[in-house]
Image (cartoon, rainbow, N blue to C red; front, side, top):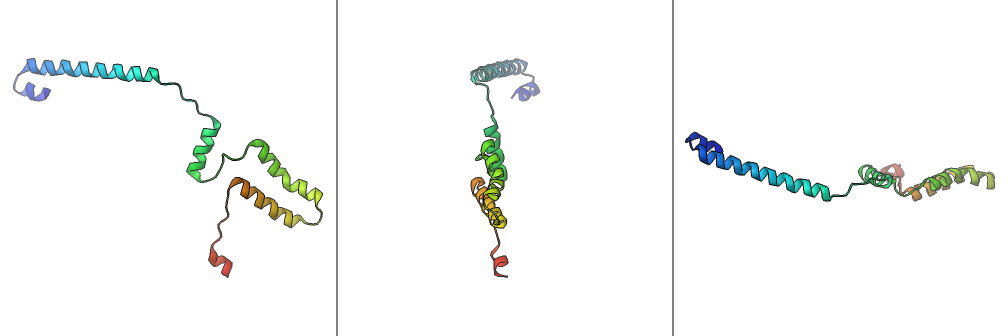
Length: 115
């Protein structure tokens, strides 16, 4: 609109539109500034990061805490001390428990099982 008025040498109308445009921009900036002042600062915790990474990668990271991880890691060693001669069975059981606690599933193709 301003360029059209300048083409026909209507400088008064062009100046009026330019002034209105500046007022609009000033009001818009005031509204933006007031809305930014109302917003509270955003706090991102480690649980937010874990859940985001988990949703992106498909690996469930938010379930286990450090104490649970330590217990799961030490589970196989503890069971090997208590049960003698069953190392392979304990290994399979511990792997199953860890998979179930972390919701990780091993997907096996059916054609591999049939061979």
